[in-house]
Image (cartoon, rainbow, N blue to C red; front, side):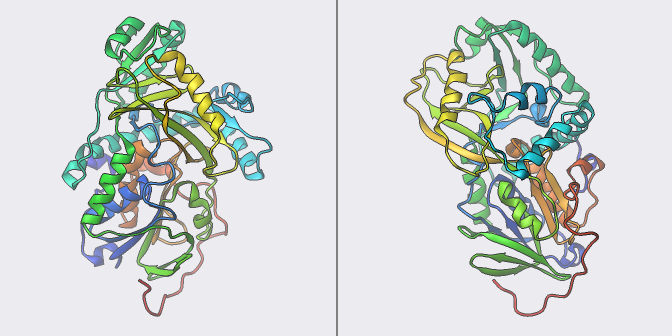
Length: 450
């Protein structure tokens, strides 16, 4: 996808060309916030990042590390109500919902079910394909911006015990070509898969290789982004919680538990914690925490590919001398409460497909809140409250894949550029407003708070 197709590339401009915006404050120090800070710096802004915990917390470090544009589809999909939500109360379900759900989660689930219609799914997948394709190109350009994280490009091995299921999924995977996305190669036998990845067990009888799907150790990427941003002078304030944001005609005040900070503009990119801040500027953001889990093991033979076990909803990603095993989505009304039974569920899901692993010798057990929206799409763009308040939140389970392009869109919106038409489904105000129309903004007077 060309830059022209994507929109205007953010670039350094005189202050007058950016509406007098010289500095921006990014709320959230996860992957979306870090990418936003990077592209904000590249566009010529002074940048500050405020993080409620430490940089890279939330869902940023413990995820599966997949950069997978061809698999960046909305979670609400045809068949999900029957195959996912209907079984979600079972203890061993990949998608687990605890009873009783809150009123907010109940409403979210109803909206999710409505978005499982084929038309809504196709509409969302098309928009996500454009965003993920752009992200792929931006990942390639990261070394030019001083972020030299190694991206593994060997692709994804889809492994199946049931050859009929493998054939069906392979046929479905070919359909992504309608969005210009790369498709898998031909079907291969279980023995051929084991030649590529000896860690795969004899249970696997068929599968296929999906090239042009990359992976990375997300913790290394977070550290490299953080180091680069520190080197170019980006300011970080950790252990600082943003409680609300007040926009004025000429400034924005960010209210934190450590005092107020005045800034020229704000990008709200705080993942599952975004709704409370967004409420303060009138943006309805039905984001629920869908917790993901992972842990690491050391196999006898480390694979060179991501091992995707679609039948059991588990994935294994090589990360240096460790193999990260992940899976599951849990809705229990908490952000980061660790439930050991979900780790046991992942072990039961992955063990039959992998060999040469001591499952008791685990490390890096992790839980993190994915910011889940009922239509499976992120919120990206200017808020209706003020052109000085931009949103980049709600990336579901695709924050890593969509991060660079989402940040680029956010900075483009901040610069007053017209965003491409295909990004309309990500409209930050699409779920409605907390008040009708735009409230009049007053001038901010007084000393800047630094």
